Image (cartoon, rainbow, N blue to C red):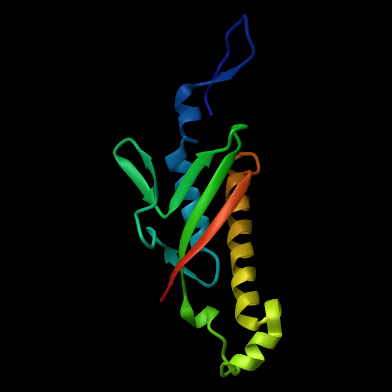
Length: 145
């Protein structure tokens, strides 16, 4: 990081160094982090419409950044899941048995845990960039391959 050591002021960062944390760079880091989670096969560009973060001559499909009213960052990450990781290995229970399991059904737990792992990976990526904790991270599981 380049510093401007003015005799009358404290060191300040150059605009080029600050620009490295533009929305495109942040979205790219989020996409890379989400891809590292076991069970995520890739980022999805969206199920019904293209979702992306847009910059000058560039876009990052599948990751949307926006700011809350208080200025806090919010993240929306769209992913495709790897069916081999997400699908249960045992035969599916009957409809009656599945309904009696309630929120503790194995498939639901797997998807909830996977969403939490994706959120954690995104939190770590943002922390590594020196950014504050986002106000929210929404994970959309668009497809399974």
